[in-house]
Image (cartoon, rainbow, N blue to C red; front, top):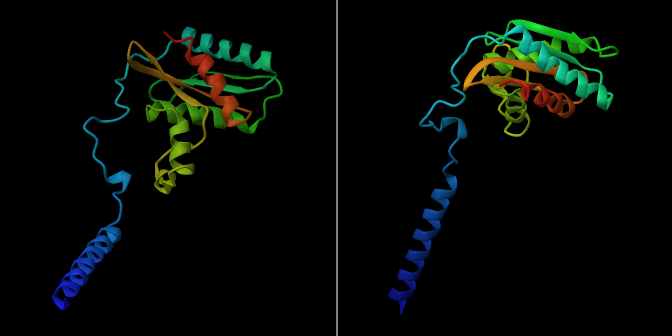
Length: 175
């Protein structure tokens, strides 16, 4: 009887010890995961033309006027250099630089700026703040034509979600 009690206690102690050891192992950091393919590896194409940039801006301005949202809108080439810009009447002055920054970040990093916002806000990836020329605010979206990055569009002047919605209107004009 004592042997059975001793054996049961030994099994219980081993099980508890193994459970505690497993609980002490930290979960894998998502930043340590090595993907098979490089994310956001969109090839560069010829820079967006002035006509394409102006058409994207005009679509954004038309939608912004329809909604009553005065905006600043910037379109850049793949390098992040400005191709076209418009400041709608009444758009806030601070948003001039912000719209350009959103477009530049989306082009240079080949991804929408909302991803930086999410990384900082939802995943607490503070290292994003150390990346050169990043803006962690939605409203910057790459422009892709024929599977190649030709530039990006950035909008600023309203809420982030409004800016992003307007950018999507501009993106839809690029083919």
